[in-house]
Amino acid sequence: MSKLKEIGLAKEEEPLTPQKRISPTSINNFFKCPRSYFYDYVAKIRVIPNIHLIKGSMVHETLEKFFKAYPKGDSVDLAQHALDIFETYWVKHQKEVRTLELKPEEVLTAKQDCLNMLNEYIITLKRQIKMLLDVGKAESERHAYYLLKPKFREIFVEDKELHCCGYIDRITKGFDGRITLADYKTSSNYGVGMTEEHERQLSIYSLLYNLQEKIMPDLVAVSFLRYGETYFLKVTPSLLRYARDTITDVWGKTRTIDIEAYPLKESSLCKWCQYHSICSGHDDWESIVRQQRLKDLVKSEKLK
Figure 1 (cartoon, rainbow, N blue to C red):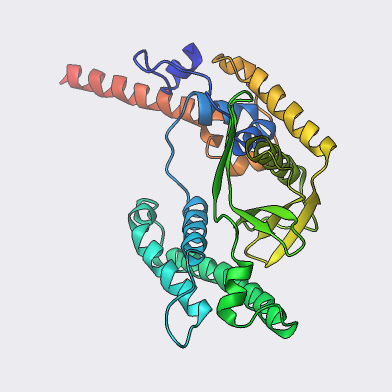
Figure 2: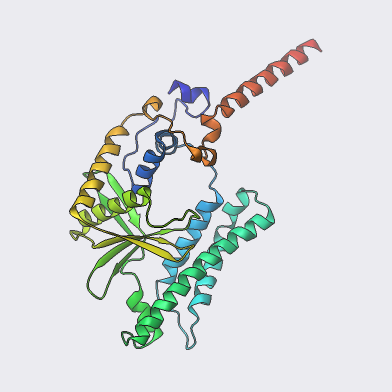
């Protein structure tokens, strides 16, 4: 606690407390860097949202509203419908975007990036609609839309005994009855297959869904909206066991408010971390410089 006070991150009237409920996101944060987890979920340091988080929110909100109902009218353009929805959320989030003080061209690039992701998603959806029409599974585009529409656009899952909860982006039930849980990814990170981080997150979603709904999903998937690619992972008893062990392990290690219990895990990703200035000592140095300038100012005033 004393170290936090020294760098101005904690106050006497704001006692630190361990996270009451962990989530797949916070668990992955802990594995990425325990110190970053501490700053996020124990110290709860307020940071300005970055453009990537804002873009992710807008795309997620657009897709959620897109799947509420098939648009009315005789001639429907699903792509334009999605873009029209996005425009409302783009306007809604403008206050947050302005706080970032980005250059006009950077804002336009961010918006175009969102549009590219949505266009890619709609292209894939329209391809699926055409396939259903071609094989006679759907009578019309509207019928195909409702066949492909997620069972839930987003569902909150929680297990109180494990102290863990999260939001699943999409749940679908195939023609064969198989249940698939999917998580949307809007980041530019991409590679063949899933990363360990993706598998960990999806395994936890599958366990929470199984415990809450009393149904074991068949598959979990990560959908890269930017690239129009989806990768699947089969849900097995061993995957659920892995998720339970992971949750229990992280829960046990995060019951303290001692910053020293959350070691810094240095890697090439540190330069992108929002807490880089703290861990690198830059904030400490800035504090020393400010104090010295204040002393010099006071001294000069006394000499007048």
